[in-house]
Length: 451
Image (tube, rainbow, N blue to C red; front, side):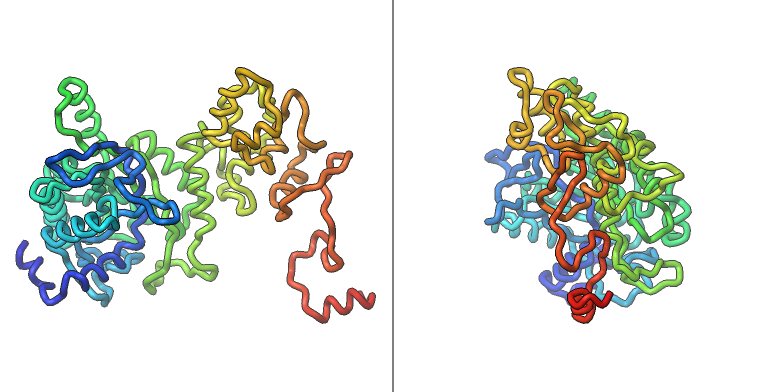
């Protein structure tokens, strides 16, 4: 172990930090902790459920975790990874003591609330996991750090090392890498679906066992009290949105994950098995998957309601909730003052918080559209799908084409006529359908009547 760690001694800690923070930028599987723990006189730091320990940036954003790799050395040659074995990139490896020192110094300066630690595979999976364990053990015992810690469990590592680490951290994650086993065989031939799911199941079982022990003995050690998450790359392999969403739904049900993260594929390597990206990384697709994921976790939707084999991709023009609503108009309009909570959640523009506020507020009064604005409902989307005391805000047609046209309108204010159609002021150079950019010569032809 020491030979591997001393092989990069010529680099300073600051040089290592620059290399290994850059190497970690494509790992998105870190988020709020879901853990609350107060500091005390014997420990340094604390952790709250929102993932914020003690400090905010000047604009109100929470200060981020220290997010680094233990090493960007790797024995694997995954075709999509910038740290793959065959790439000629600067390499560095932290010692456990260096990571502890960095974490404490960053924390004391109020730069971070905690640590997110991942790693390439150095030597073998068990050795890598042992280095991570050693780091966290030192941080918790010698440095008395009590803040939030999220680490990656390394597939293929010894189960006992993963278990020991789980008692020291708040959250663990195991990267699924790619949505399907077929994609993994093509782009990451050294990794196997079974070896990835095995530690995921181990963590799930450990969480259950820990909860049972804590119920009996209040001071029993907690195992991964913030739960586990995973990440998969989107767009590197040909799976459609329907397949990806079904994989995510299966992970939530079978492994009780806290989050599934979606990472738009960024082409950092040239390889015949990697797709071309003429439009750049599929960021809008990633965004739609996150929106759909939210519907699965908090809004009571199932994957089969949002997509199917005949419609395997999300509509880029509408968010998944709007798209579902315009295709299921039989459920609308929803009466705000009587509809059950579950029905309110399915209305575009009404979120979990606003739905709860509606249910609470209507116990004492009949709500109006003005009340909905104050509650936090996004009226410009919800107005097409709800009534207040039996009346819609404007005359509205429950027709798919009409609703799609209005929901995708860039106008901030939609004008309604008595016939239920919307109208907007047209410019001299806008026929309502033309979406291309007009040249100066085209505008001159319009003015002079030459078209």
